[in-house]
Amino acid sequence: MKSVLAVFAHPDDAELTCFGTLGVLHSRGYRVLVGIVTDGTAGSPYTAINGRVQEAERASAIMGSNSFAVRCPTAICNTAAA
Image (cartoon, rainbow, N blue to C red; front, side, top):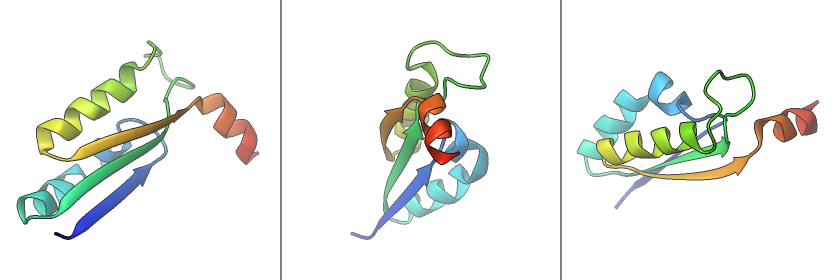
């Protein structure tokens, strides 16, 4: 089985950018993995603990893909990149 790994900085980036493409790949037999690097808490009005990550994981499950999250606090990742 062929696999696709899509890695995104923030929860919901996959849904907003290419979930349609990932869904087509899944329907064609690809194993789809969606990786999320940050927890999405910085710069978002929705900062409930794990809320955005859980939503992204549910969206992946609906599409039939697997999702995993590193859950690096966004503020720490932003500081490290600066």
